[in-house]
Image 1 (spheres, rainbow, N blue to C red):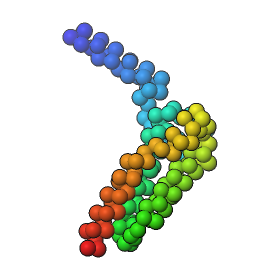
Image 2: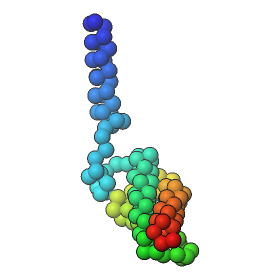
Image 3: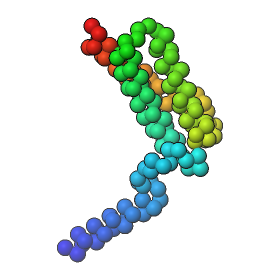
Image 4: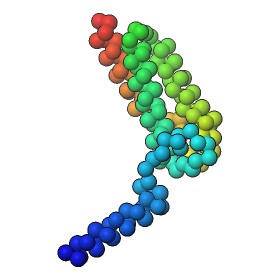
Length: 131
């Protein structure tokens, strides 16, 4: 029984050390707008990915509900999505893009998944609502 408690205590100590090292610390939403915050490549990539997915879903639902048709609206989505991502990491977070693989790597983060989500939402809403 004592051995079980010591294992449990050791696990709690390891867990608290991991939290102190920052490996498992909870994500703080205030960090999303803090230009002084430090980012590692995976964290910034995840944030950019999910921002792009949210924009893709919103634009796809809006494009389908209005109903917009044509390739120009696809291009407009790409321009809006890329512009917002660039503005977020370059102007709000003010990160040095070279530390994260350059503009290409940051702008590509989540792009293809967002295109898929955008097209899926746009086509489904348009087809179900206006056909």
